[in-house]
Image 1 (cartoon, rainbow, N blue to C red):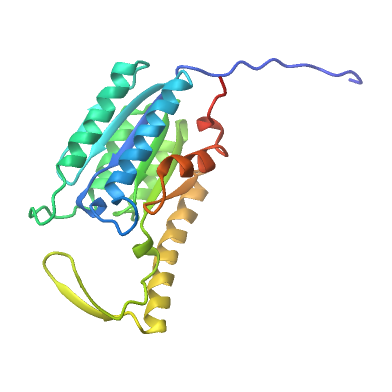
Image 2 (cartoon, rainbow, N blue to C red; image 1 turned 60 degrees about the horizontal axis):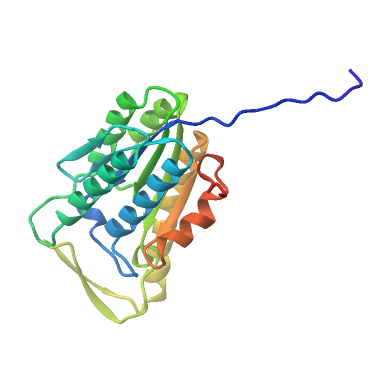
Length: 241
């Protein structure tokens, strides 16, 4: 038209946010500063307060291999503390050699539940190592992203990303044992490549659905990692005072 037009946009507030916090037995592992379960708990707690500070409504599904605790979204400090207590309860229930079996299928069960709860305009933040990500996960993510924003915080450990050169090691899952010679470069390379391939495959599937996957490692303080990562995600930027 030959003349400038001005638009005024109002920032959306009071948006429900649903955190899916993984506290399964596969998260009870760590070779860095924290266990994966603790790293996930720290990350979820920081996201809860960030969501609340933005004027939105934090809620959560905190889950382990057998149970889940649901906290419906609400904009209040009381609701935020309820989420943190639920995470603490699940985290402290984790024990080594307690006979609990890992249930990868629980990931998809939680995504199905989130699909029923988050009907429209939710921010869904999955904090997990993605154990159980399979062919059934893809359509679940597609349904969730149809009317909601989804972010994945991938919790991982240095010992998952690569084996140290530490001679012969005996590795056990509590039932079976395996001896490996970490002095072999070919073994260490195959190990690293296998992890990278798994992550890239998940990342590719998430990218198809416009879902950012942000890695959170157990070897460093979580707050600094989140500040660096979430600053690039519009829905989770820290607001200045």
